[in-house]
Image 1 (cartoon, rainbow, N blue to C red):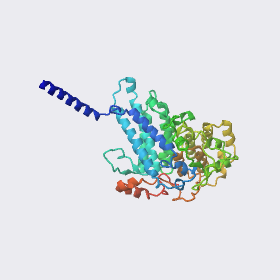
Image 2 (image 1 turned 120 degrees about the vertical axis):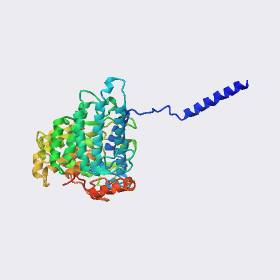
Image 3 (image 1 turned 45 degrees about the vertical axis):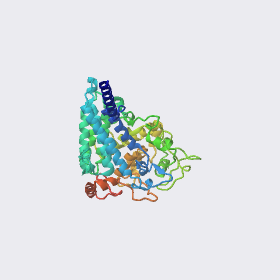
Image 4 (image 1 turned 30 degrees about the vertical axis):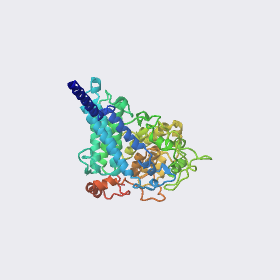
Length: 483
């Protein structure tokens, strides 16, 4: 009997021990995250950051003077410090986008797929990841200048060095060229895990070529020879040819997967933004048919924008339209209208891209109006105005380089609601002229200042970067912003 009791006790102790060890096991979460899921998350984080209006995350729509704050005007007055905007932008793009894309590539490369049809998609998936990495790094360079690059994704290096912005940009263009050539358009890639093109590699190749076009144009004033060859190569590879090619992220109707602007303006229940006078005044002057597509009329009719940097009563000024704040508004990171404006710029710079500056300019404006919900007839009528017609507008421009003013103004109007890319275009072309902020903490910003955490924790490399670019001030122009 005593032996039986000892045996039972041993069994109980062993069972209890096994159960206790089991308590430390997470049986609900997978032990490893599929590379495809990492890609999906990184893609959403990237687009969210690019299109967001939340002043804690992205101020570019204010800096492009599309919108104006109503009560709290710090960001309209170029305050980058109070909310640590640069730090958020930096963290999201490095940690939530690049690191996850990098990990997605590693996991996918190491995955043994059971179906041959899945395994044969691996190469294309890796190229799509590479294209989004290039896009993300390009945004960082365009925003900050010199940034961590060669050491940026080394998890064991918490203090990465900063690389020269122009050197990084040139390498990114080389990487993009390799990815374009490596994509096999006879096969797919991520399928439903891709919320931009559903895995269509033909569309991803067009996107990559169009991104290469954009990057080439950005270098025009700093390395015209490389810019020309890059642009012409991109066109040969095949850029966007219609709005059906647009890189639109698909958002859903329910929180938390709605368009960020819907969360900012509708779900928040706040009235923090109105239209800005800079864009509204220009659209009023030009009798722009996109006014009701971009904004709502004020009480009594017409469109009115708030003063830059000044408090603006919400009830007094125009608000964004219903389609801008819709839950399922597309998250646009590159579109056909922009590509046609880039081709117009290329033609004006005498690059061999086919067509003329005027033909591409006309196509760009028409694509923008129609894509927003206007008609071809409205576009034709708009283009016949002397203030819009390319040839007539060139003749009346007093700018040192007239085409920069003519293309720059209309490109800015078409890039509405795409703050970061619009801000880059403003800095490159120097048009349209931005209005002075009422209580600006700086002149018009030409860069994000480096994050405070970099200044404190990665001080040596930060100081080296600042010395290389000049100063860490908002007014400091970056390497590509020469004129």
